[in-house]
Length: 252
Image (cartoon, rainbow, N blue to C red; front, side):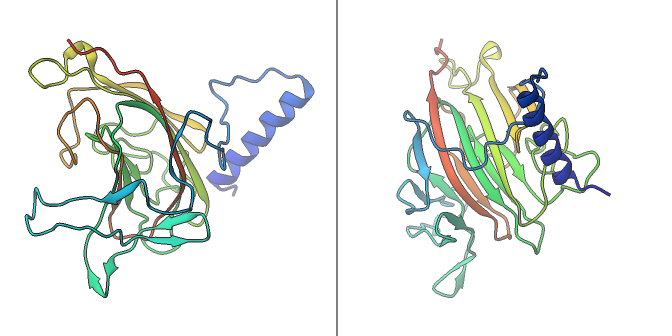
């Protein structure tokens, strides 16, 4: 039986062959690999393997006032990647990473790799009222609200485009930030929207996030906010992370 990841690779190869032979190819539907894609000139590079300068530990002070983390405990690995770590100086502690810079609307590129052991549970908070789930669920016929590529507890991906452990995967996410009204809340006509491609496959197409939010959202609604990488008990790796900023919706 052909694995799902092999099927996607064959699909990509067929697209290249059709293009070479002059056969029409639909760019809207055909997966296009962005693995290893270099950041454009106007991108904000968040991680290129050289260090954690763009990141800081997520502060849990709103839950635990005594938790004031200052040092990044995640590890640099493989020359160009970061890996989730669970302790510092022999002491176990939970740590998310969030960007020092905040963003409104943007296009995010990120690559991740699931470990061979465990569930591969992690996530990417964008907005960050919302979480794009990272998980080992490549073998699922119909992914659910908590599987890889889901907008966690809000919307399942249209298709299962996830690869298995040990394979580098790509996320290309376009986020249109919500319009925030004078009352400090998202307006009905200015809801946030998101388009996501996982491994080149479109899994969320200009989805209106409306007024719903993940109950585990890390931050309140604001015009700009950090991008957050979640630690959830698995040694997930990340690399080649960059953002291209887009104009914000006008507040009313």
